[in-house]
Amino acid sequence: MDYSNKQIEKIIIGCILQKGDLYEKLIGIVNDYDFTNTLYRKLYKLFGLFYKHNKKIDIATVSDYIYKKGDIENWIYANDLGMGLLMEIKNAVPNLLMLDQYVKILTNDTYNRNILEATEKYRIGKLTAEKLTEIIENTKPPEEVKKETNEDIILKTLEDAEHGTDFKFPDNFEGLNEITGGFDRGDLIIIGGYPSNGKSSMCTELTVGFCNMELNVLTITLEMSTRANMRRLLANTQTINTMKFRRGNLSDLDKSKIRAMIPVINKVWKYNCVRAYTMPDILRAVTEYKPDIVIIDYLQNIADRENLSEYARLTKFTLQIQQMAKAKNTATFLLSQFHRPQEGKIRKPRNNDFRGSGSIEERAEIIFLIYWERKLKMESLSRSGNEDPEYVIIDVTKNKDGETGEVEQKVFPECHKWYTIDDDSIGEVIKYENAKVKSKEESEKKERYKKGRY
Image 1 (cartoon, one colour):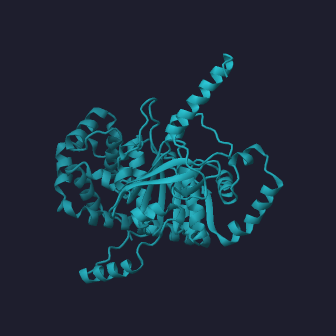
Image 2: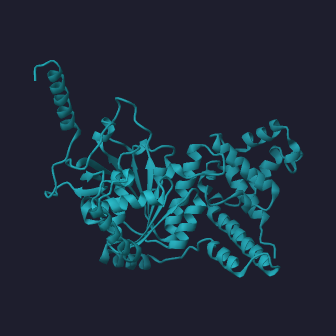
Image 3: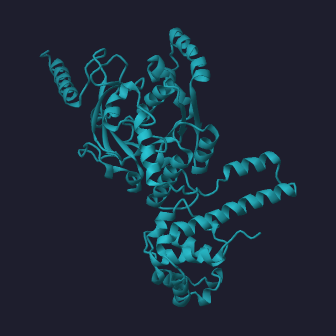
């Protein structure tokens, strides 16, 4: 059976020719291999090229590109691919508002072709039964839209209200619970901030908290190795300066405490950490481990084979990660970098500081922006482990269901431990203003000593 519908392929291309910005909506949902007709596949690829270079997608620009390209033999029907044929494709659209339904038919055909191809390869001995099973499990059909009555929705809303959100933040982030009320499965939560300003450290503390709450947590690292990530977890749980691991000067007591954590992390916690480089790597890991919570560190490091602009690449990945969170029913924390601030222009971060794409802000249910002022303004900052905690602000700048606001935290970055601001069991925070004054006094004191006036 031929699982293809060339009329639907033509209509989808026509929808984009009618309204070029619809292409962005299809990124991550429709791919060029979904089109079995060579012409429509090439046109869809061309739309991607235009999008990459921020070029308007319409009949005029497409026709002009093909006319000027000169390499006509690479275009099927190229001699006839002028305004007339493009207008015919555009006018083939029965109803632009039904694009989602056209896409559903297209992607369903792709799904059936993939299953048929795999089954045929198994039949002729080119695939093992195990590989066939793996392909079928990882090839998901387009999601069916379940029709719900208003009564169904109201009753489900009441049921949800009985227990609140699916998850709460650990107790040492109680300020986040007060503002957000927690978070749900399928939510995309963005943690943004300047480079080396505490994003990964915060996620280390969240990981420990979620694991202690008996949740299944998967960390996907695109930056640190799995061993570096484990160092942070051990530093947090045993309150050990991370640099002691790196310098090789752990004490016998440190080693004993770490060994005692092996059965906890290995058998009690539902925790896994994998190294990934691409979106397929991320999807495979989530499919394999089926976590309650996924932490992806971080967006800008995801590699892509396509030579897309940064804007198009990050728009595509953010959409795919949001879709993954919904499809896999997992809460997803996605770390995202800001551009490094210019010297003398350091300020509290804003949502428009995200590096690369406005889609990062648009797709998130919740956004946390981290601001560690002293670290930003004193880049040579170093800690031995005996100092008072640092002062870090988590600014909740987006919350799909209501409140936003700032949460103050006490942080020991050397062991990635985060505490509420009102925890009196630990010291007062070191703020930049106070540190600046103290640094100035110490410099003046040294200067007086040099001049013999100490």
